[in-house]
Length: 121
Image 1 (spheres, rainbow, N blue to C red):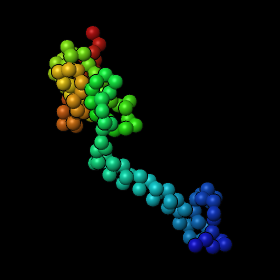
Image 2: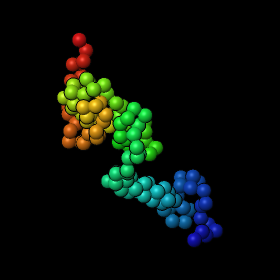
Image 3: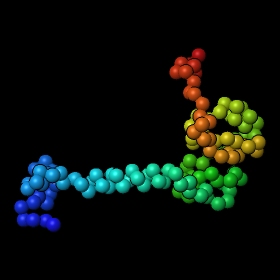
Image 4: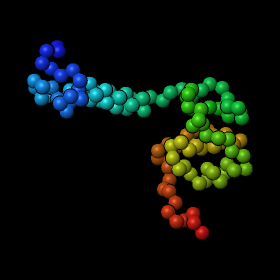
């Protein structure tokens, strides 16, 4: 309940209520906490992939609205070397013999990164 002596603008008096010195940012804290809770819930639920095939004949691995993250199709001759190198991240994929990504890599499949100077001759 808003009393006549309370501050309406939270930026006035450093964001504090004139009467009680209680922070007026409760709504922001509640919103941030709610967003954190929703993000944790969304991470545990896996949205369904886009139905059908991509323009190059592979099945979609990503949900609608995230087509940018669909792993690209490889040449069939590149698959063995790619799968042998392992996964660099969870956005990396394991590929089938036809060059299509079969599934995203799991966290447990991510290998160590090369040493910092190992790519420099």
